[in-house]
Length: 260
Image (cartoon, rainbow, N blue to C red; front, side, top):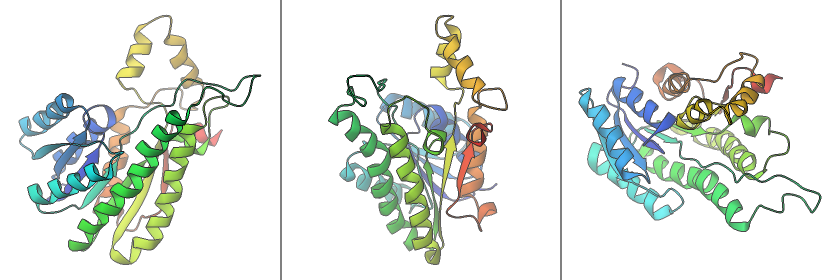
């Protein structure tokens, strides 16, 4: 078991990639703290893990609020004794706005900008910093950020807020990796492309939107949408002792998209 007796805190783990990874981490022996805004879905994730005979607990957290992140780390320490793994996976998509003859992305509001920076970058920094305090007490740990293939190769004509925020996580990964290596704390990031989530399945089920997915597939040399298990597998490896020499790495999980 790759994560036996580790305590893993995963933000945005009530559904999608986060839920799939939480289940995988638990199956590999971790005690998982599920964190999200959606309490009902978070409880479902915990129940799914417990029904398989593994350990998990839920903590409601708004990652844009530092006080909630502080409470999350305290909850993990009080419940399971500390924090060994912190994965900032919580995220939100950009508003569907593009540039126009009337100006450069006039539809992006200050609230749009703040949401992207707060959910991704602010939460990543403060969440990781608070996790480090707990990891130092245990002699080390592993931090993982969910960035995006869009941070490595931004889609043309789309709102810049999401790629900018996600690229900030890449820089944070590299800076923290260097600073924390001497403390036996590794920091890495994954950059997924289009993944078969509930949203993608919904698009595929509707003939009027199926073309959107077809367009995404055309951007990927492997010619298919990625599966959530493929992302969870990579994440599990990066936070495990099997990756003990890997830090500061930014791993594209993109079917070759960013190589084009």
